[in-house]
Image (cartoon, rainbow, N blue to C red; front, side, top):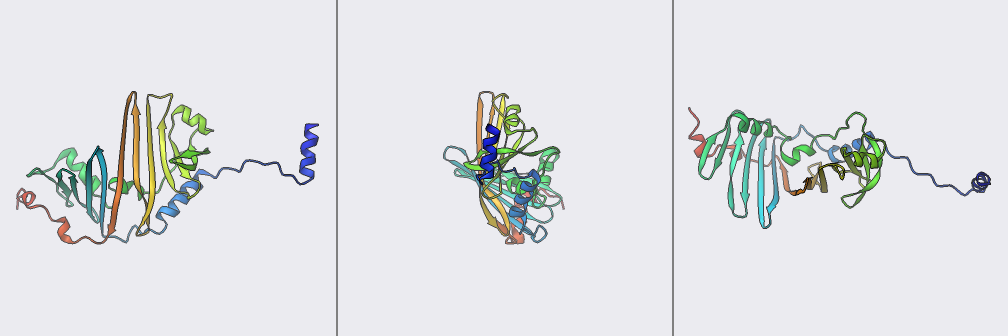
Length: 256
């Protein structure tokens, strides 16, 4: 009788609702890239200026300014609400630091870190966003859920979202409304660790759509930590050559 009733409903034109198929993970990733990078000419710019800030302790704001020039020159200026925090940089061949009136030529891992950071388009939180998102082998859309206050599609490795969360595997979240990438989680209730990265407030800077608010929450055992970064400004091709000059105390250390 149940089967007959369902058949009669279909016969009289009453639709039996079926869940909509989930979009493919590759489609979600491609849509985000089209939105975020679709109007961005990665070969067009010679210099890049980025200013971002974070509140590391209540009431103490740390501001970081990055001055970059193609292909691999960098000056980083750090300041706080309590005063200047110092300068460091890489001029294509030399890594240096100037802090509390003391200049140093950097070597080893310190120099390597600055050299890597100086690669154009690849530094700081902005560098992460200028790279197309990629899928690991086997990742697929596993369900729909709320994340960062929005309805999202979730992407992971296991057959369902519940299974992925239970196993603590990485899960990526894409907004159903905008198609933009909103962040990821790793770990969970069954693990001793949990990490949640959230991206919000996308804005257009010269054709590049950038999440200007980034928050990372982590829990290890009973210890919790939250860190947020806000991108205040991005400018292309507005820096003079003088922005990349070595500070006088650093120049004094360079042998003729």
